[in-house]
Image (tube, rainbow, N blue to C red):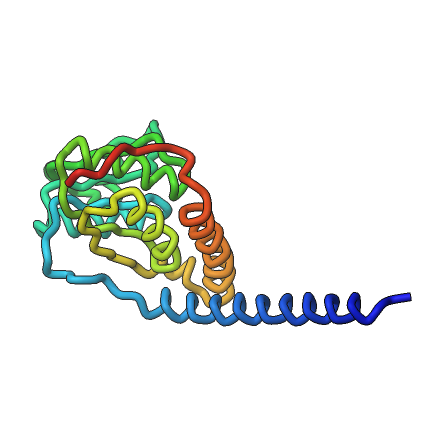
Length: 206
């Protein structure tokens, strides 16, 4: 026999589950709207460095465009395969290039967004960089922002979200991407603000 107290508890749990579900759903809708309308911030403002998070040639090409336009002195491309060279990336950007732009640095150790933040923050500190422009896809920006502002809390980080290529931007595929990224972003927020980071990047003294 179910007691009145047990019934009240079951009702409370059911209401709580529904409320959390609605909050999660509304959060996803806001996330989807936010990443869809996101635009590059302070496009005319130069930074010490441009950081590109790999995940598509469109991101790298955008970083190279910004470097060629004089928006920064350094371009750091995080998460590059160890067999890829700067010349190969530049040739994909402009097949008939005459020279390799200065100063491009490849980060070879990152395998995910957390790794991007780790290797980028280490390079930023080594170079004495004070401000960066972070280039990544619009749907990836919220999670990358959490990771980078946590890794570089005293640095100036300007966001430069870009739309995926047309092949990735069809409605069904984009919704799937945003759905996955929304959940990853929530988990990242919990990991960064509820549990300590898995690694130490050292004090941010700049």
